[in-house]
Length: 183
Image 1 (cartoon, rainbow, N blue to C red):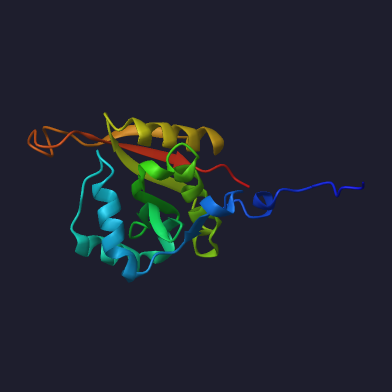
Image 2: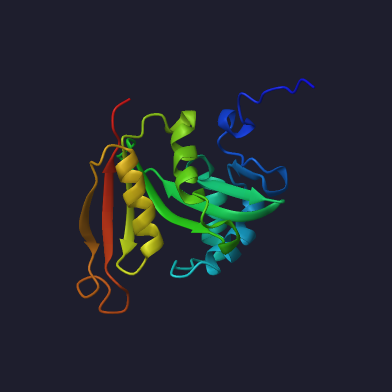
């Protein structure tokens, strides 16, 4: 019996969707209706700082072009908040990357960063910046991988010092600045 040969997996054409329909991931811009669910997701992802739910509503509405939500079975399982700092339109500052334990281990964080860079409104981005505390192993791994993939031009400096800026009440935040390789 003749069997058709599969020459291409469907997720190759659309890398923002997984192969298994039951576990399909949808990457999209957030809306303000997502604010509370985003807030609850971030609260479930230590060591991320929990901001007010109002902040998450503003991120989802005002910064939707530089934020991404990932849904699985109609539930939000990941969120990246980001913005372009004033007067630096070539830079995308990644504020937080939250991935639910249900979606970890399959590269969702990396794929969210790539999805942001794939958007036409972010075409002029030449630098990715983020701040990371010493103990956030997941973020360090994600941004080292992202740096390696994008040309290894990253640099880490102290952004906010535990004692000088936080009076000992918060860990130091290290700025990881990644220059994207030219296409």
